[in-house]
Length: 248
Image 1: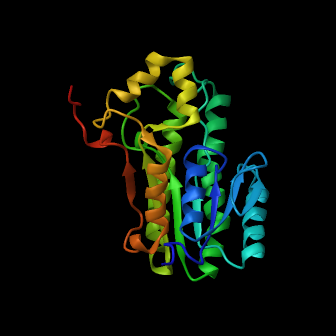
Image 2 (image 1 turned 60 degrees about the horizontal axis):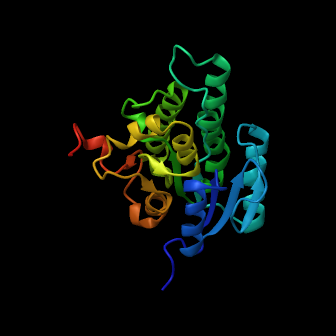
């Protein structure tokens, strides 16, 4: 039985770990050829590229290389992002810290859409999944002012593109994960268990998500099973966005 992405070519940024790495694995299992992209060499994928996604020329070259290698591009998973320690309250975050987060989390998504979507159009259509966050629709329990603002921007950008391109065969959706057990979150627990625990108390399921669970949501959005979905806010968050209070 063919996989759900059989014959498709996907480009995944932020592929070296967490949700990105899990998605590469799921995409490959479902038959896709995957270009795994990260800042450093060694990201998983059929083709691994080291790319600074904040560099517009490098992003354009990345998609040109993918198309040259495989003949077409069908799926973009724009997932690269950072959440540094110096991004906190608006009262404390420096402009340098603010801009660094905006560049990686929002500007790179703009570049990836700008230079990746033409390849989807050339292929007759495709799917774009941009990683936003549950904090794009809710205030965060622990302040990360630039991160939250950047993810709100990703959500709005995705909605706009989804509407713009709906009749051209390109679907654009925003993936909004809840708190996920990734190396980034484990690092936060190690540094500040109290701050990390505040994230968990609001999740009705009482646990963090697994990267593989988020990757399965990405697979759905990438596949033809979501063919009537575009410009959507796709929450995979353990119920956090629907909870007023959580049960004891």
